[in-house]
Amino acid sequence: MVQVKITGVKHFLNSIKPQLSEIVHSCLQDTIGTPENKKFQRFFPLEPENFFYPSDRTSQYTLIEIVMFEGV
Image 1 (cartoon, helix red, strand yellow):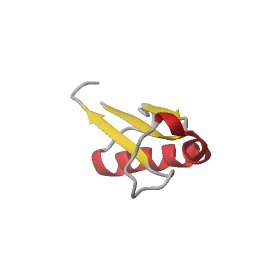
Image 2 (cartoon, helix red, strand yellow):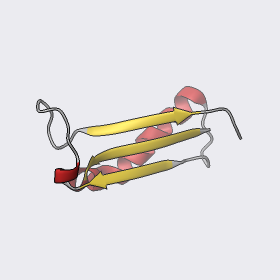
Image 3 (cartoon, helix red, strand yellow):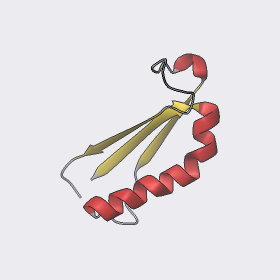
Image 4 (cartoon, one colour):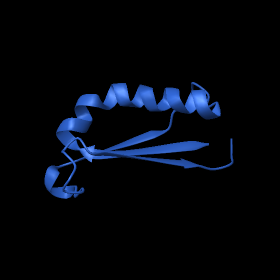
């Protein structure tokens, strides 16, 4: 089973959410064979004042965390 957590600045993350969701799921299908109907993703769009990222990055900085564990 694969769980995906995606965190970023709200105004940017919301603008790419549908496309990013499909890209991430497609990559998981291609690399580890995740079934089409097993998409488990959580998006965390944060206000800029609640998301601290490195100073050499822009507000498009996005974290993608992928957790895999054995299961059905």
